[in-house]
Image 1 (cartoon, rainbow, N blue to C red):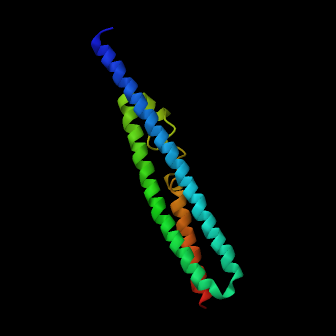
Image 2 (image 1 turned 180 degrees about the horizontal axis):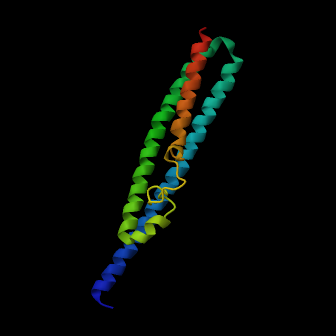
Image 3 (image 1 turned 180 degrees about the vertical axis):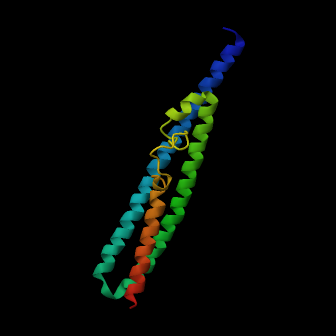
Length: 149
């Protein structure tokens, strides 16, 4: 084996290690994303339950709910951007290793890999926290408006 082939195999091993590191990063990020989703969902549901038991404090609890939901929305936008960035990094590494591996990665969506059938971009699982927070902002706004009537 000549020196050029050894260098090429060494480069490929380094790229595979980089791929593994990036996959680990996105896995950990998904864990954090869902942990935050559950936290904010729990806070909002607890506030709704609490709001129903305190008839005179609808306005204050609703404002707290709106604040938490807006914070949730901002954090979910950041989470979504990090997922997009991590996926791009994985896609870049895979294209350097071998373009055929691109469609085999579990972290590249069907749409990004060129398979557009049965993939609904709007329902992406990483958009769910943002959509849910918008739903809660709407619920809290409705409760706030109706409590003043």
